[in-house]
Image (cartoon, rainbow, N blue to C red; front, side):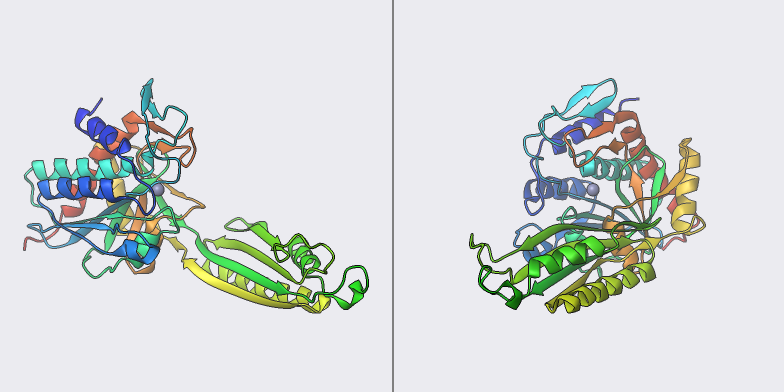
Length: 377
Ligand SMILES: [Zn+2]
């Protein structure tokens, strides 16, 4: 059944321009909406870390019960998300085909606002509610990463930012390392004395052609999409003395991820040694993996909330990361909550509206189920 309130808010926010680092217009609207719902709202300076003016929006609403619950989604969207014109066909919302839809993650924002409206209107005692709308999620979880977590008292949280139908919870995601190898060879005249040179381009090619990459095992992958050789000049009569490899590795198992990082380092060194080239390998932890078992409270609450709402409960582990990776690494058990979108990050992105409306009801049920059994203050 159509929820006009959710629908209107969805259209309002989808048609408000936003991008990673340019979330200001959405942030202003959301601050006002949270204040209307009785939240004390602050905005941090997370954006400054990335040269932007917009920070994370953090809303706190003290409750009558002990305990605190985190509800979060993100305000930015991938590129091609300006001037969105939503079009509804047969209960599904699309863009007009020229842009993304940005249901990732505006649908999550709307589900949270609706859940809070329903929960506060019910008049039942509530715990402290902590709402975080992050910036720069699409740029490697930037906003969540630099956010000071000290205002948050929650031990569990729901991140409304996952593809699929309502009732689907994401209870695991890989960790990621960014990997880089800079190869230094030796220049020499290509015609007179190529044997006096050390070819960095060939070293790079040998490293890549013999490197284990792509699907490494069931839960691990790597990808090296950025290769560069030469100094950028059009001079082709000098043996190449500089090359660069950039990529990433992911795994849901931290040990496997760290093992691969070490393997990458050793492999680059071995091939470079064979060529007599120098190599500088740098590895950077981007975010850590997590997995939450189905008997963890964050998921038993989810299961009960789904039962109350007559929504089929389902857990899934995906290959992408979301703000939950950051919160879990800080010791807060958080899972992703699906809100009905699919084909996100493309112009074919779509939002199944019935699923979306139900995700608002589910958010209210999550708050109420969490509240059950909590002591009064
Ligand atoms: Zn997202």
